[in-house]
Image (cartoon, rainbow, N blue to C red):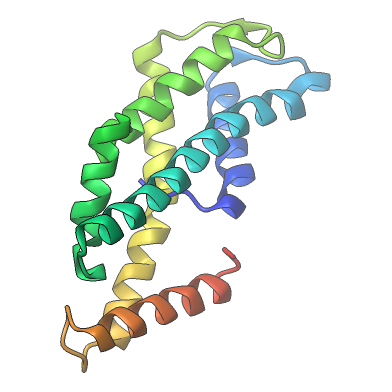
Amino acid sequence: MRIYPKQIPNMARDILKALMDNNDVEVQPAKVEEARKDIGAVLSEFLRMERQLDDLAKDVLASRGWSSSHYGEARRVAAEARKVPQGDEAIEYVVNQVLEAMMNSTNFEEVFAEDHVMRKRIVDIIREHMKLDEEIETEVRRRLKNLEEGGRDWDIAYRKTVEEIRRLKGLT
């Protein structure tokens, strides 16, 4: 699950809005911004964990003498070592953290809906925001269709193209 720092305020806003619009939670008008920040803090913490995982994966690559083409495997090793959930488990983890934050926050006046109802709404919003990463991946592969995947040239061009597209989309 990839979250970009610039997505966090919008994602938190969308989650809170969906929960409030469906009368799942009650937030006093004066506390809406703080409630949004509570949700954003959960997303930011997950992003921080992901960045630590990226650094640890780079260390695994270096310590094992692996090329960057083994980054995915190194990241999986790092995630297992740190017990950081990945994929669908990461989404479930973040949703559980959001629900826990709402229950413990004084900014949420009342929570009316059952967890499974709110969980579905939150997952749908997270998945919608994650489509951006899929769009970037598709665009990168389209641009690099003339290069052979897995080589050094591919790795370099891939990273540069991803950064360029992220910049164009205002994510960096």
